[in-house]
Amino acid sequence: MKTRVLAVLATGLTAMMVAGRPVPAAAPVTPRVREVADLSLRDVAVAVYDSLHPVIYYNPSLMKQFGPDLALFFMAHEHAHIALKHTRAGALRASDPSQRDRLLQQKELEADCLAAQRLGNEGREGALAAVRFFSRLGDRSFDAEHPTGTTRAAKILSCMPR
Picture 1: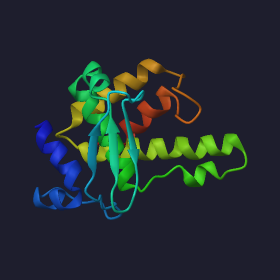
Picture 2: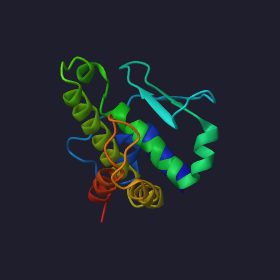
Picture 3: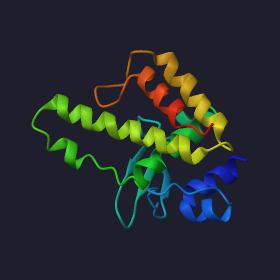
């Protein structure tokens, strides 16, 4: 099951159409994304959008610590950043740091939502693992650029298929 979900994430809308799943009208098309393992990465994963060569760097050691369901969500989240063409450029140009942080937090919530939608019912356990993970964080966040755990958990729940 997880292999099939990852295949849908990797091939985007084409796989959704072949599988007979409804394709959201405004769903972005995902270019082929290279995934690079990097044990020195301090974060679980980081997406770098480039229109021709997008890359997701991930730390396999950290992924393993979180377990397969949560790792599935984290990778879906990074693929969503790529699909949404998220970069930090616009936010970093903001003159007010709080405005920059709000813009970056919005991108995180957009990626959470698209990840939950793309995982669908087949990847439901991954999305639910993320809801549990972020719920435990409560009103804390990793940094000013990320929303609180409560906010992220609520967003994921609201975007999951019924």
